[in-house]
Length: 88
Image 1: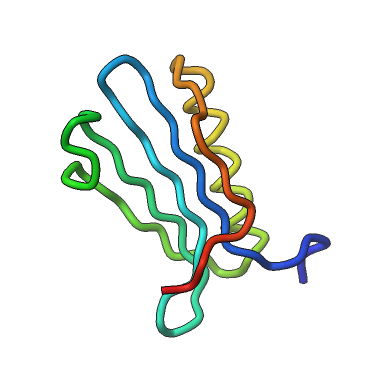
Image 2: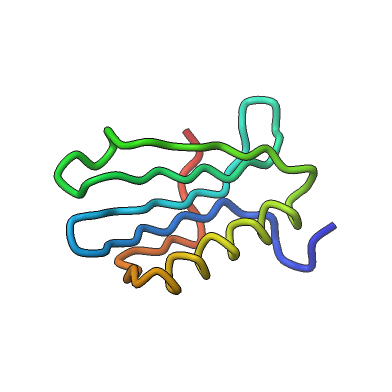
């Protein structure tokens, strides 16, 4: 089990006219997943996305942090980060 409390995470990134959102959450079967959504800012929510199912929370957290690091290296700026998001 993770040394961190298992919580849902969300971060929103921007670069010029582009956005990138990263979400760590659980699906309806309680599997940990990381969902990345990206596209043009004015069409936020209508871009592309990919979802990665993880073996456990630690693996999901590692992928979440890797995606955040990748955004920083590519010049994105984090505009919002929630350490706990509401379950749907």
